[in-house]
Length: 371
Ligand SMILES: Cc1cc2nc3c(=O)[nH]c(=O)nc-3n(C[C@H](O)[C@H](O)[C@H](O)COP(=O)(O)OP(=O)(O)OC[C@H]3O[C@@H](n4cnc5c(N)ncnc54)[C@H](O)[C@@H]3O)c2cc1C
Image (cartoon, rainbow, N blue to C red; front, side, top):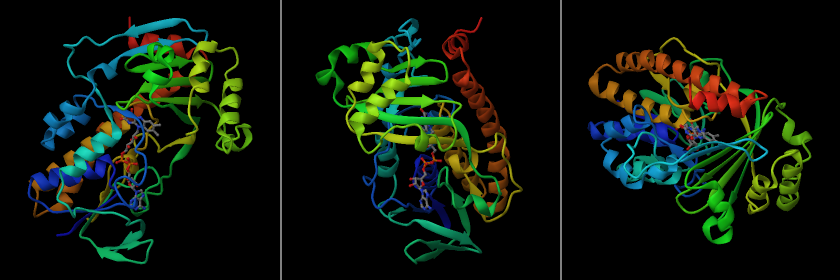
């Protein structure tokens, strides 16, 4: 039986790894031309019950602990006028509940744990069906079980459901300050070792320290239309002018906070945030399934990668438990995944609602410190 996994993101690789641990071969078809073809983005916090559980099933938890950053759990929550609402510093002996890890390091960990030819780079799926994968370069391959791990804009999804991602009203811009300790020590001290969060009226800034000394800065604009980038007046082709425009958009913000934007380099990435309907399901079909964002794209509030990893691990375990009955394995996996991802999707939607509300910072404080 040939298992084809389309997409070599965290979910697809976790599946390939757990299958490999159980002596089952699979082929991962990945669109990127090589592992270094594209930046993997910033940090992820992996939760002990989901993302870390997946790595335990994959036999990689010790290697994960070696690259995880305990102090990345530090958090500061502020209002746009600079009022500090919450500061949490992680003690040296704190449990690794939600340590941060660089996405690229985590992906490398998974890639290095697979046999050399398990990932076929430069294979962009164009369409699939009836046991045949057709790639953009004209090539093809056969499968008995197809797993769509191909992310938010999944091509495999259409085989199972008509659902499509819908814009959430959030438009985000990613920027970054390289080597912050050397280039801007004052801002480095302000951001601290982990997450620095400023929530305003329909706008937010989050700055996050990465393992390589870069601080990634995400600016989000909520309750904005899907074509907002075209109408916002942000000149993405001129990064210096774009930074000035972004600062202008944050009316009334403390200049010490907006200094983070002024200090960024010329990397500037617009991201329009979309989600699938919360609680999406489909009738199980024997030869195809989905995992990760392809199955349950959620707002980016800390659950998506954790769910993708656990999906991959649990699907791998189900297939290993039913090596002669993949349809039963797929059904078992989907039954659990629908419930788990539905719950995570509802929680993410709740956090997203807080972020979009006029008094987001106070509500978030109450979320972190209930009662
Ligand atoms: C700004 C931002 C911040 C986030 N922060 C967090 C966080 O802190 N914690 C968290 O848990 N989650 C976070 N998320 C969500 C998280 O990134 C995703 O949920 C997670 O990456 C999903 O993993 P995946 O393997 O399903 O998909 P992806 O990581 O998207 O991987 C899909 C893979 O499929 C490949 N692919 C796509 N199309 C094709 C094709 N046609 N043919 C072949 N290959 C294809 C892609 O190249 C990619 O390698 C964040 C998301 C965003 C946008």
